[in-house]
Amino acid sequence: MGRRTDGLPIHRGAGVNAALITALGSYTSMAQELGLAAGVIGALVILWIALRFGATLMSKLKPSTLFIINKVNGALLLAIGLYLFANNFTAMVVRAAVLTLRQMGVLPA
Image 1 (cartoon, rainbow, N blue to C red):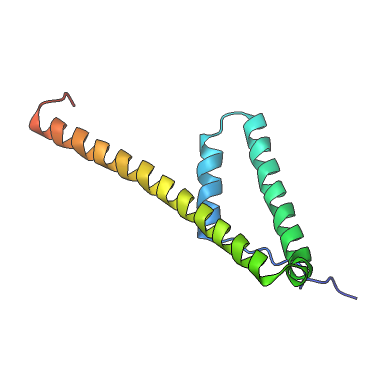
Image 2 (image 1 turned 180 degrees about the vertical axis):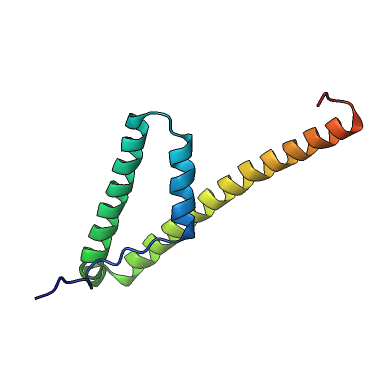
């Protein structure tokens, strides 16, 4: 009898690979790398729990409760996206200003 593989789909894409490579490149000690591994394993456990018990939980909740959960999750996702955009946009503007000032000779190279 073969292993059951239909219960937990674990797929990783290019974004996960890039994030792991970037994170591992910036860590300098074994403790930091072990912390990253623990975080990944913790995320996988939470994902497994959500996939395993999600249908049961959804059948027991009212549609209005599911609606509120969806709205809260959407607001959190939007807030995270705006935060990342604002930080990256600010860094991009500062970098462009510094490069422009260097080309004009105002700042040393």
